[in-house]
Amino acid sequence: MRGLLTCLRQAAAPPTSRLKYYVTKVIVEMNVFKILTMLVPAAHKLLPAVQSQASTRRSEPVGHFGRDWSVRGRAGFSLIELLVVIAVVAVLAALVVAVTGNVRQSADQVKNAEKLRNLGLASLAYASDNNGRLPLTVMVGTGARMTQGPVLYNTQSINALSMLTNQWDDAAEDRPVWGMSDYLEGPDAFYGPLTPNLEREANRFHYYNDSPIAYLISYIYYSLPGGVDTTNPPRSPLAPGLSNDSVNSAGISTTPLFSDPTSTSWADNLMGGFTGDKITVVRMDGSIASFDRSYIYSLASNDKVRALGDVLED
Image 1: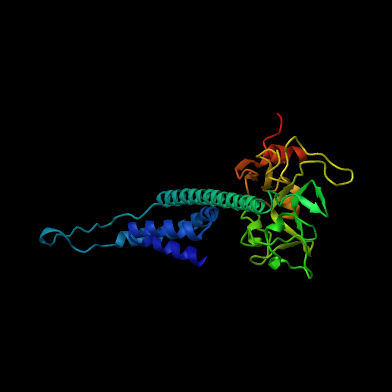
Image 2: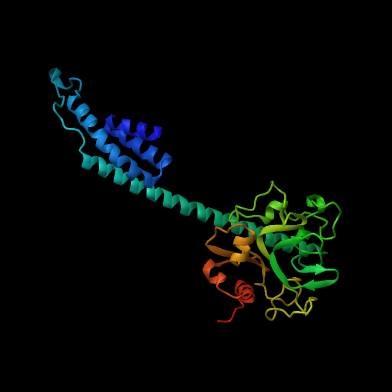
C-alpha cells in the first residue's frame, strides 16, 4: 500500500517525470490486475487535489523583455485522462509480463536441450573407452534388461551412473555400477531446469523414496538391448534395430538415450511437475529432437519410445 501511495503522489510531478515513474514503478513492483482495482477508486480521491494544484501552478517569467508566459487557470487532468493512462500502463505491463514469461520458457528449453546433449556426448565418450558399449543398457549381473524410467540404482552392475566415479556415491559401501572416470561434471548433469521441484544439494543426487541407493533424476533413460532381455518373461526389442547397448551394433542411429519425462506419472507424481511445453530427446547419434508434449503424452508406453526414435509407424 505504501508503494501505491507513493505512486499516486507522483501525479502532481511534471508530465515527463510522472510518466517515467508510472512505467517503471507499476511494471516492476505492482501486479497488473491489482492496478485497475486499486487505482480507479484512488483516482477519484486524488482528482480534486491534482486539479487544485494544477490551477494554482505558476511558472517563472521567461522570454523577451521579461514577459510572463505562465499559464493561469489551467485545468488539471480529468478523471478520464487518468483512467486512460492507467489502462495504457496496465496493457504495457501485461505485455511485458507475457514477453518475459516466453523468454524465460525459451531460455529454459535451450538450457534443457544442452543438458540432454551433454548426457548424449558423455554416453558416446564412455562407449569410445569401453569397446563401443554404451552405459544406458541396464546390466544386472551378466544380463541386460529392457527398461526405462527416471530412477537409477547404484546396486546394478552398469547403467548411466557408470559415467561417474564413486566419489559421488552416498551409500555406505562401494557399488559396482560406478565407472573409472568422470564423463560428466557430477550429479548436476542429470538435473535440468524444467523440473524445479527436485530439491537437493548442489552436485548431490535426489534420493528416490529416501534411499541412498536409488536416485531420482530429471530425465528418462532408455535401456534397450539389441536382443531378448533377461526379464521373466523375456522381452524382445520394441522395434527392429531399436537398441542402445553398443555403438558397434546394427542399431538405429536415432535410438533414444535420454529424454524429458514422457508421462504425467513420471513428471507429476515422481518429479513434482514438469514445466516444459516440449519433450526433448537426445539420440544415439548425438542429435536432439523435440516433440509436442501433448502428442507424446497421448501415446502408449512403447509407442512413446518408438516416436522418440522416429520408428513409430503412422
